[in-house]
Every structure is written in structure tokens, then in C-alpha cells.
Image (tube, rainbow, N blue to C red):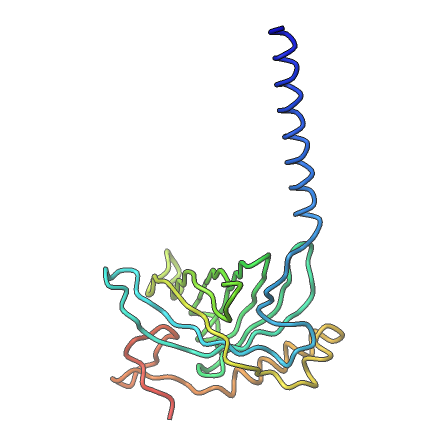
Amino acid sequence: MKADLRLFALKRILGCLAFAGATVGVAHATPQHFPAVDQVAAPGTLYSITFYDDTSNTHNQWATQNICFVQGPVQGSNTTGLWYSTTYNRWIGLWRQEGDQIFMIGDFWKGQGKDAMQVELVTTKDEGFGHWNEWVEDGAYGNWIAKGNTRIAKLGTCLPQGLAEKALADWEETKQAAMKEAEAAPVRYRKDGTLAQPTDRDQQPVN
């Protein structure tokens, strides 16, 4: 009797493991790209991105910028693309999405300044929440100038329709066009006249 029970229990465990393995296999075989941060052939999707200071117990709000997401090639289980800011000069980078997770890297000050963001989209709303880190290269450890949380919220569209439609067909041309758009964004300054970084709480508003 005990041997039969042990055999039954072993079969149940093996069955559960087989089901779990099959489920994981299906999850990895079927990329989940929705809700998409930007739809294929859409004219770019415009979001606001807001920084909240993690070094403060009250998570004070610092700066808000606008960024345009443009979808590029699919790589395995990831959708990939580029992004650029419409409110901060030459702030531009890359993103990838897997499921509802968005990972972003970017540069400002022509590469001296760096950003890294990780955001989880809310499936029922056009927004997402996560983390945002910003630093400036100094030839050593780097100057970590901003450590915080972030919120993105969908605003509308951005990249012209014609460019978006051929983004996947001519990705290099799309990147060049996005760079021109980024370079057309305003240079941002602090109240004291020095250059502001994207997260800077003391930057002057766009005129």
C-alpha cells in the first residue's frame, strides 16, 4: 500500500514538473510584446518621463521630459527600438521590451552623460513605473548624479508617419532622422546659466 502511494505521489510530481516545463517553453517561444511601448508602423509614440529622487524619503519630484519611442527590429523575445527627447537637446538612446518590461539606455552631452531606466508598463493604462539612474563619466567610477524612481505616461505620437512606415525597411535612415529630431530639441540650462542634465530639478522651463 505504501509503495503504491509513493508511486502515485511520484507520478503526480513528475506530471507537475512536465507541465511546468511545457508552460515555460511556451512562454519563451511566444514573445509577449503587448502592451507595446510603440506599435509597428505607428508614427512614433510620445511619452512624458518624470524623475522622483530616491535619496529623499519623500521622493521629491525633479524634472519631466518628453521622449519619442520608435520601434525597430525584433530580437528573439525582445522588441527593440530607439528613443529621443523632444524637450532636451540630443538626449537619445535605445530601448528593448519583453512582456511589459522596458529597458532603456541613453546619452546626453554627446556621450559624457549617461542614463539607464527600467520601467514596467501598466497593462490597463497608458503609463509605466520603474527606476531611473543618471551619471556623468569622469574617467573613473563616474559621478552618479541622480538615483530615482520614474513614471512614464503616453501623450500621443511623434515621429512623422512616413519615416515610421519605413523604419524597419531602412533602420539606418530612421536612426539618422531621429538624431536630427533630437538635435532640434532645446538646450536646457539651470537657473545659474550652466547646462542642466535631463533629471535636473533646477533647469529652466522651455521657452
